[in-house]
Amino acid sequence: MWHNRVPQGKKSAREQFGGFPAWARCATTPAVADVFTKQQRSQVMAAIRSTGNRATELRLAAILRAHGITGWRRRQTLPGKPDFVFRRQRLAVFVDGCFWHGCPRHLRMPRSNHPYWKRKIARNIRRDRAINHLLKKGGWQVLRVWEHALRSPELVARRIASKLAIERDCKRDCKLAPKGA
Image (cartoon, rainbow, N blue to C red; front, side, top):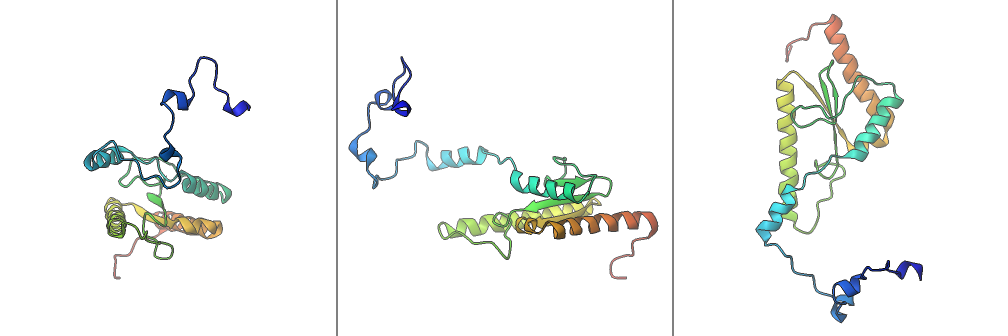
């Protein structure tokens, strides 16, 4: 068969690695031991950085374009690395994944290693609140959109547009009343 052919002068995986013992072909094979210690594996995994939530960001970008909302930028250097930034209106928009940011409607905590995941998600929620506070202290508006909300593009666009309109109106012709007034 054509898919079993190995190019001339190359060795097949079986030849290269000395064949596979019978236990390696068995479905009930025990897990292979890790070549790293637990601490080394932790360091290796910690060094891997995510590249963002590209699919959800692209979905929101499509929603913004479809509704004619302009003036946004991506990959701006602000605390928390907002997914979208409207610099003129000083609005930072985050698209939060339901699992990683602890959506009250959709979070399903894994059963395996439950204490780890509970701490991890709680830490993410605390970090989100700290970032919100830091940005607001710096004069920024913060808008967080849940990943599941992107299924209703009109509602998301309306939320963002209303936040932008409030900012524009207040800067043009109204004074912000102090809190509690």
